[in-house]
Image 1: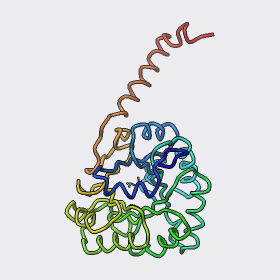
Image 2: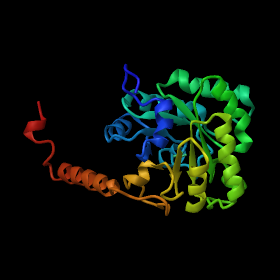
Image 3: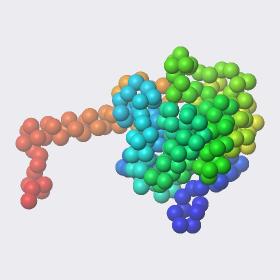
Length: 265
Ligand code: KIV
């Protein structure tokens, strides 16, 4: 950790692959929840473009803008003291060539307190990853199911082309990525990739052999009332807690029990 902030650095995060302890990451999108996730002691927090769906209510991750990612990353960056904070580069902020990608990722690092970016892609994004890394911008790659390519992939499907998956992970590593998210790939393929690369693999729907795991916070906390993907585990059901609390408030207001004298001046 760096002495000033005691925040996990990128090299420390990468070195965790060989520490014998699994890495834990969760997403966060605002100051209050990012502070709580950080207090739980995870090593990494991702300001994911999943916010397009779970915060903004869009059907996929395509609509969220760079401006909006920066806005949420600023809040998360202000809250986090311990974890490494990674920010997703939204579609299509890194598809217009290395120069534009550096400009956009540079904005994220300049305007938020976050330390790294994540981008979807492996071999086909190797040139962009290398350019960002040579500009001093740490990159987490994202291989397997790439939600920004949902239309091209024909839906949110498990990606099974093991040769391509390995080639993508190795290309990302050679380009200088400090870690790779592996999303929705067979557990055996994730194990082979994890053994083949020297940077940490962070799985989501990729089995137990990855060097770490990440979950979308709204799935983990049970904040979604709708569909929960098979790969997600719900550790709390906050949707019920919230509805119950607000219902109790409503009932007390209607019954003229709230506010009591102790809440009045
Ligand atoms: O945007 C996101 O939350 C992600 C995770 C699913 C890895 O990319």
